[in-house]
Image (cartoon, rainbow, N blue to C red; front, side):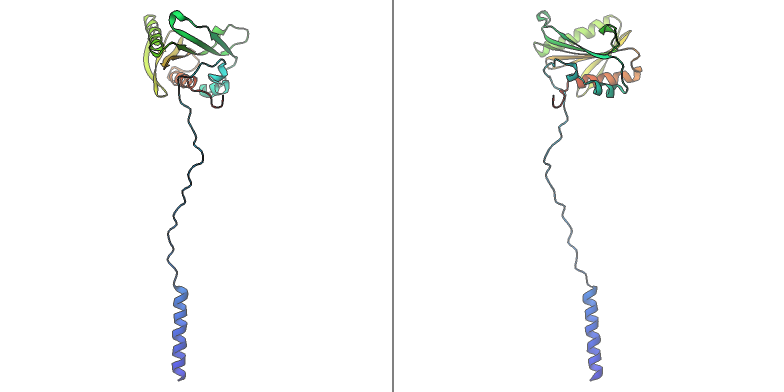
Amino acid sequence: MRTAVLAAMVVLACAGCSAVATQPVAQPQIPTIVPPTSFSRIPQMTDRPLPDDCELVIPVELFHQKLGRELPGELKTIIGIPEPSLGRTGKIDCYYGVPERQPIAAAPVVIGLATYTDEPTAAARVADSVAAEREDGATVREVDVGKRKGQLISAKDERLLVGWLGKTTFVARAKVGVLPDDAIGGFLAAVAQQSMTPIEGA
């Protein structure tokens, strides 16, 4: 009898051990997907209305970032007048780095926007400008400006990039020496793209 009781106690003890050792199978956790509450929008080039301030074309701080260094001098703004004979309805030219007590023509970098009556007129103005530069001996090659194309012109004293989007033409020009020739094309394309991209919150 005593042997039977001891055997039963051993069986119960072992059963208890088995109960402790057994672990429930963990269920895989399904990640909770939370829909975003806001989307970040990347500004894009657009046939924008002409601003009346060059800080709204390219702010000086952003201009310096794209150049890779600070350019001494001032930013000067010139608002052009419409020229119906050319189909031009508006114009703004931005002169970056104008040296103190020197004319705006001394600016090492100039960025300009102009609007025309329609897209064919804007495209024709760009084509005429490129043809005139070629006649003066400049070389021309096509480059990317954002998702658009532009014409990078290498003239004797400057490098310039011209193109159009809708009814608006853009031009970015830099005097020779502002950047090495292997870097100037990328810089001009970057500032041309920015000039056609409205400033967020402006």
